[in-house]
Amino acid sequence: MIKLLVLDVDGTLTDGGITYSNNGDELKTFDVSDGLAIATWTKKLGKKAAIITGRTSLIVEKRAKDLKIEHLYQGVHNKDEIIENILKEENLSWHEVAAIGDDLNDYKMLKKAGISFTPANGSKYIKEIVNVQCNSYGGSGAVREMIEYIIKEDGIEEDFINAWL
Image (tube, rainbow, N blue to C red; front, side, top):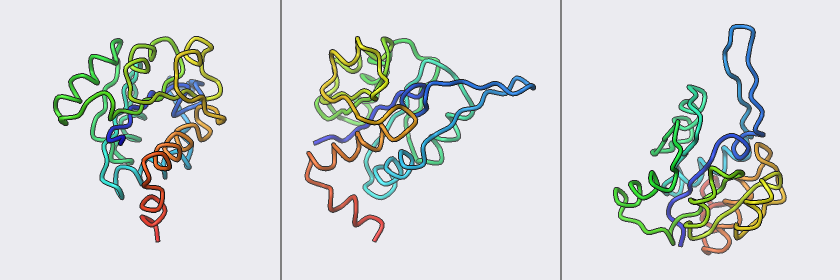
């Protein structure tokens, strides 16, 4: 059973685009359906989630807080090392981890995860190693698709639905 979701940001929770305003502010767009699924996972089902990203952004910090994601690590180059620390802290093992990423900086964590996913627009190198290739693109429901896959496989689909009834 999966107890920890590990999420990449650019290309996974977003479409990978980075927009700068004239003032130099960085803008990102997140998918609402991804957010509802993550919030159901964390707030309604009481499960753990982590965002681990190579970039640093206040926008990501806000999104993590909104979704009650307890573990947020930005500016990270060795994502699998961060996950090792989270696993120790939460008393979990790699087989209880589901991870989603789209590019080479996600490779090691995806290889170690109990189940791994990539969006439809993930790198061909990542597509070769993951367990599941999503039909949805990053920033367009790939994380929602991942969570729906997990809850079905873990037999908690009814709990997921009933959380909002």
